[in-house]
Figure 1 (cartoon, helix red, strand yellow):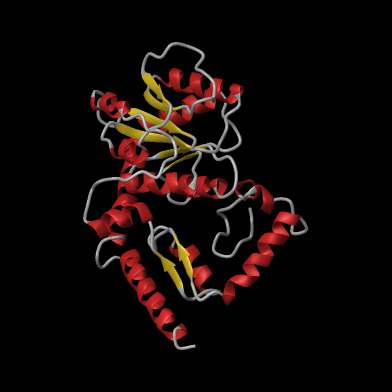
Figure 2 (cartoon, rainbow, N blue to C red):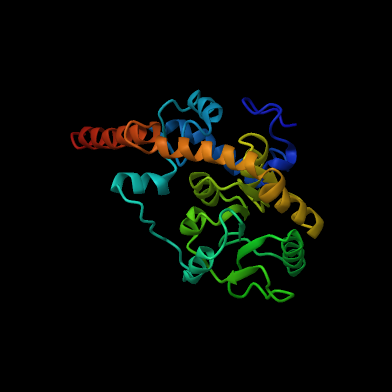
Length: 290
């Protein structure tokens, strides 16, 4: 276990970003430490998270940077401020919305949504293992397979493959009961807000920490880091979609409720965002007289 204050007994060495596993002498770690030491000179820290989700972590950060603004989840916060349920996409990829029509035809909470984000590149071997694990699980699936990422090894029977999908709309669809994800922070928050349990296969950076929290702190899914053989994939999918589905769905819905409450008027993120605006205005007025 890694002895980090507030995370004792939670994070293991393999849950840390790769740059944090190589020791303090690495160039990347030295650069991170240098920037971190500069942070106290800032007038505040803005984070895309919310108090209920990461209370202990935010408490530790506030011991060094008291003026912290936890204003997330930002995508849900935007909708709350606009008083709208509509989703807006910032994707650089063209979205295939035909998958929503396919989802309309599927039973409730029966589909695994599979997407590893816009950066992660699966090897051909990993792609085949994920494919067989999904097919062998017997569950329906919607897989985002970016253009140029290769093809599928067999015919599709219980699923569809698209080049890109409107992720927020997919996660909010009642047919989706699980999300096989790389666990990037945006995808993690989108899944949290939608109340969808996750099967996490992290690749780099904060994804390793996120997946550990999903599986062992928030307990709303499974952490599948370090392996993607077909037997493990099948087991994880069955676990989330069948054997422990009620348990994971209930916890995911509880987190989703707290996320939505945080960005509504009177919520912690809503209040922090108002405070941020006022502080920026006050600073602008002060500096205009300097």
